[in-house]
Image (cartoon, rainbow, N blue to C red; front, side, top):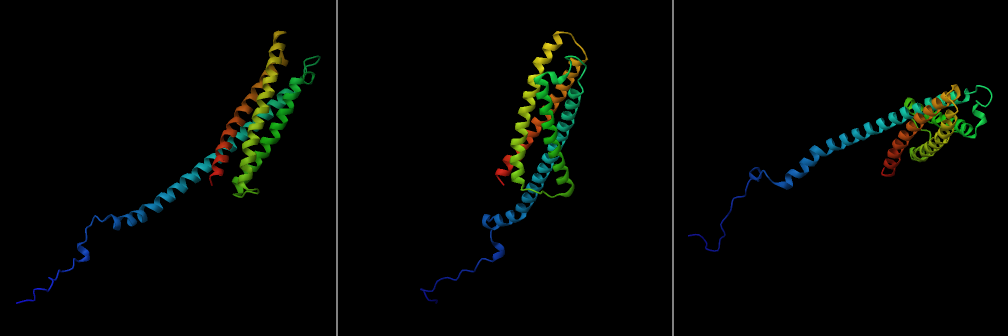
Length: 201
């Protein structure tokens, strides 16, 4: 007879028979399997978004530069003798001054962005340029809007005296500057996206 105080011996459960649905065993494997994939895809999406913003910003700056040059040239060449000369009117002189400012700003920004895309290097800290772009685009858009807004009433008053080559040229210049304003306004929106993205990096 055996000892009544002796405890029955229980065979150990083999490791292979452990439940297959153990959450603690599967969670690390899932993280290791899917974590890097999600990280790489997020980085790729971010790179694509940044590349899209850079190219979109460059396109709007080039458009703003072209329209600013056209508005400047049309207004400066708007000299037809007697009173039909742009420099006889303060509104048109202001219009030309803002066109020059727009050409300088958009030209400098276009050159900088083309240089960055071709070399892949940035001379100044990106955060600094993000601030300059954000505020610079908004200020220029405001001045462009104010300049053609001042020229429109004057042109309408002159057209009441009769349509002529002088007023038609003024309308063409104002139209070009409106397009320049639209391009700079879009650029300001893109600069805003880049600026606020920089704040969270």
